[in-house]
Image (cartoon, rainbow, N blue to C red):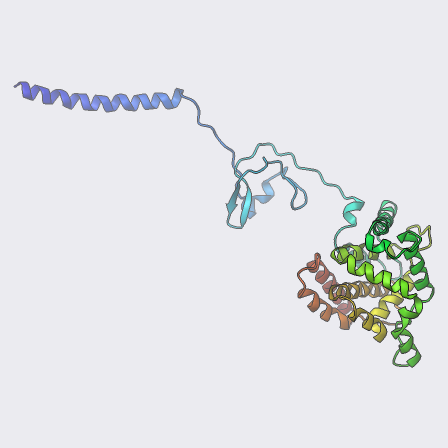
Length: 336
C-alpha cells in the first residue's frame, strides 16, 4: 500500500516541475535584459533600388561612413557592404574640379568635339584648367632640373627654358606630312628631319629623358597632349606652346610619312603606341574642326592600333584608349 502511494506522488511531482520551469522561462524572457539588435546591410533587389533615398553618392573607392576594417557581407554578386553599420549614413559630397579634369585618358575632349559644330574650334577649358595644365608642365621641367642624369648635360639653363628653345625650333620648321610619293625630296627631308632640325646634343637630351622617365611616360604624354591642345582661349604668355597647325603637321608626320614612322619604330614599343594614339586624336580633331588641310586619313590606323593596345595590359588607361578609338572609328563610319 505504501509503495502504491509513493508512485502516485511522483506522477504529480514531474508535471508540476515542468510547468514551473516553463513559467520561469517565460518570466525571464519578458523581464530580463533585451537581446542586442544589430542592423545589417542587405543586398537590395533591383526592383526596389528606386525606393531607397539618401544613398551615398561618390566615386568608386571612397568610404561610405562605415567603421574601418569591418568585415563585409557577401552576396551573389560579391561584397555588398560591412556586416554592421551605424545609421544614418552621411554621404561624402563630391564636386567637379580642375584637378579631376586633368586625370584619365581625356575622353571628355572628344565628347565635346562630337557635340560641337565642326566649323568652330572646341577648347578643353578656360581659367583654372589652363593654369593647372601650365603648372603641371612647369612642374615636370622643374622635376627634371633635380635629376642627376639631366644635370650631367651641363646645359647652363633650366629644363623649361631649354625645352622651350627646342619647341621653338621645331615649330619654326614643321615637317611635310604628305607628298612623299610625289616629291622624292620630301621623302629625304622627312627621313633626316630631326637630325637637321635639332643639334646632336638636343637629341641626346631627349633620348635620355625618354629612357629615364619611361615609368611615368603615360601620364606625362597625356599632360603634354592637354597642353598643346589648350587652344587660343588659354593664354600662351611665353609663346612656347605650338599652334594647332604645327601640332597637326607633326601628327601627320608620325602617322603618314616614312621618316616619321621610322623614328617611332626606333623608339620603345609603349612610346610608339602612345604617340600613334595621340597623333590619331589630333588628326581626328583636325577633321572635326575642318582643319585637315592635307586630307590625312586615320581610319587605316584605328583597328591595328586597337589590336596593339589590346595586347598591352600594362597600359594604365588601356580600356579608355580602346574606347576612344572605337568612338572615333564610329564617327568615320557614320560619315561614309
